[in-house]
Image (spheres, helix red, strand yellow):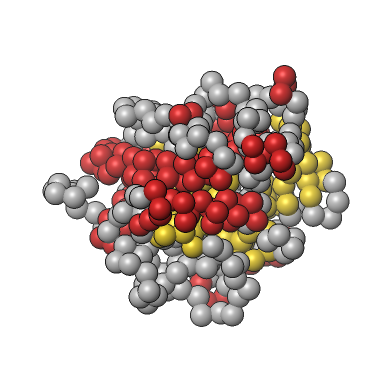
Length: 370
């Protein structure tokens, strides 16, 4: 929040990046300094279209925040985990399984990962609730500003480029992604904690099974602990690289964001853009022992939008529509969000083969990859 006197907060010391030789995903880098002109957008449209059709992931640079703002958001992202007692976390524990809404804390060891091993992930979600832990109160304006920046300066430009890539009017997807100025709806801060080695062995080093996201677009703010992997087009898992500050060929606001497609966007585009399969695994050896702090913005279209394809897209007409469910049976965003949120990590899945587990949610086959 430029110009404002910000409340004091303990500085979050970022862990060092890995020095190990990992197999990195070759993700396209999209320079958002070009979105402000018609010529720049025209240059970016095929890049974003092809990236989201091939990888489902892309890297955004020059999105408008300074390095100081990037550093600050991780300082305040750590507050829900280091400045709130376990008893208070329990008071604000999410009731996702009962309500399908994610606000509040998801506590550690509440999901099953594999072979009976429980997760070591905790997160706090801002989803329009008015009540928050006392330690978070001074930082609420910054949490709101974080959501606003992601929504208007990252999500909206991406949505415009995606719509143009389908030869639809530029505002097609923007028009179904309203932002409620009174609430931070989809901002989430999370922290992974190291796990005992015997549990790592039992879980095959998987911290979060391979999955696709619920909504339309996910914005992940890069951090240095390598643990995120995506399934590449050849079916192999590859690591997502953290771009270090030394890459001076980027502009001053070089801190980058990873953007990916979710289920709702795949349904809205009739498979033209496919939801990205990704997972979280144990970090490489030189980063084990550190916690992994994350900052996310999970975008979803308006709750009353029915998740059916925009079949008036000339590009989709040429490519052919791929539906997850017949239009008459398609869920709304609200129904899809609630059903998938309530089921994740606690509902039984059926093993299809050595890699894929499936469950049926609202008539849609949802796959998990182990």
